Length: 117
Image (cartoon, rainbow, N blue to C red; front, side, top):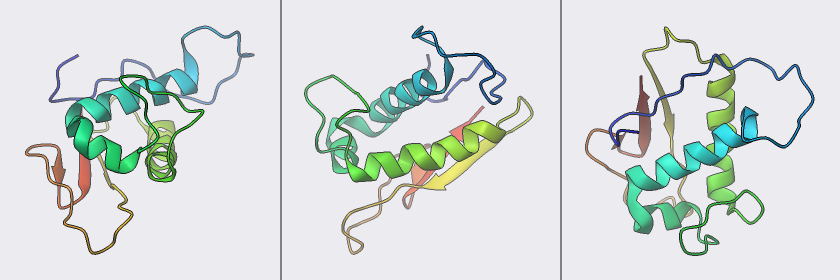
């Protein structure tokens, strides 16, 4: 997956089948979103959102408050995402409101994450 774009080849709709534990569905998309976000932000910035992360492992069982907020915001967008959606934007939360806003060229501007098609 290119580091410049988040690609989703699924038409995300409410899950209509019973969960069988396979690597699919909403939870799997969330996990891959967090992996993608960590790659975009880098370890240092990602740890400001999820200080509980251990090594390279990303899980939902011990995630920090801020990364949980990010995933909840992402969840709202992914449920309405369509192939025609050009981009999704939302703000990344910060613990310290006086901290300098997160900036990553081409991805995050003044704390606003941009996910392009």
